[in-house]
Image 1 (cartoon, rainbow, N blue to C red):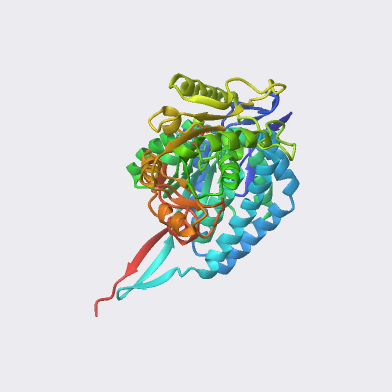
Image 2: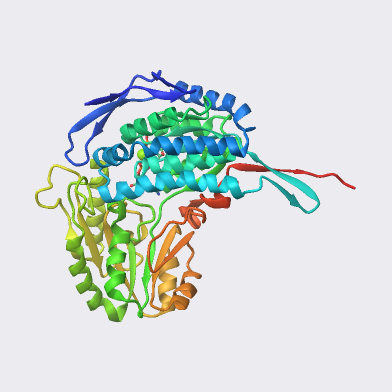
Length: 473
Ligand code: NAP
Ligand code: MG
């Protein structure tokens, strides 16, 4: 049993003023792992004050100094690889496979921030003027549980590259993971107040960050509903917002694709991070005349996606993070059945032998039409909807008939054809014949998948405010 009773303000682990505790429950066994003491409004204000003071000097640091800080954090994180992977599997139920990828992603975010500092010009000439790209101020970072330390590393490293200071509110469910990254950040010896982390509830700590006039910008990842609440509050003080919200990503398999490769890839895209991924490819669009072939391939592939103990390296799908999330996924499977979709694989209930944890059966629905709720709403679990199309035009139409637009996938043996289709899909990223992450390319959503972009120069500029110096001749 672990008790986490410190938050981090102004370079120190401190006891929060908040006195409430939140239980940390194992997603794999539903046993209590520990508890975390939650910060309150006052704690959040103290963290913001520390970040505000630190900004005065940190905003003036040179690129070389920032690169040094980023290297220091990276080397602290490098020393704790096994700890990061273990705590993510234990506390969050992330599979060993996903936790390993997530760990690499954390390290790469420091490399790409360093890369940006080596290549980006903070002073530009536009027209006849000098334009200075200046750090925006204190950034509030509000993140969910599905890749907690990955989000902390990517958002914090961009903030540091920009010369901004931060107040971070992770999900309280990630408290042990937060404690570990905090130990690394503390060891990296950054100036006091550059990063502050407050464990606490969204409606308290998150709400204060959204409201407080000393926060200049919010970088949020999470649900579309909470993103809207934050954006509405933020506008009162004209905070800039970057919102990474939900998705219902289409995966178009063209008739000339190699189905024996494309279908396993599609299942992988749907069930990544146990389905708890905003970029999961949850709508599989296939040519109508290939349905039987696809059904057979899905049946053949599904047993390779082993459900079970997330610590087992062979496990592809672990438990849902919480009982609440388990129930949400069950409700959606029931909704799919009620809507008249047909279960090809999986279904309601827990897999045999896994009754103690929040495990669901990876589920594939066929006979889905794009108007059903299971095709329109983000489920955030391993549930895939197969939708058929007659023509390429119809495939594009279905792909774009969604309120979301975060990511999409296209498979074809003809790369020119795939490129042409990809160029017509309204999504921030389109993956062609595979799944990759380019940390120098923008990531973010069209439509209700969010506002703004992260990564690369576009991501960096979201933490900068341009100042034009005009000297009429
Ligand atoms: P969420 O409610 O959007 O939470 C994300 C973060 O926002 C958490 O730190 C949360 O704190 C905080 N928050 C909640 N209410 C807030 C408020 N009024 N003001 C400021 N911050 C607030 O997501 P969730 O409850 O963890 O998951 C619910 C659903 O969101 C999932 O089922 C999934 O569909 C979606 N989701 C999407 C993503 C994504 O990457 N796009 C990630 C996670 C979840 P608390 O933890 O204290 O609530
Ligand atoms: Mg919540």
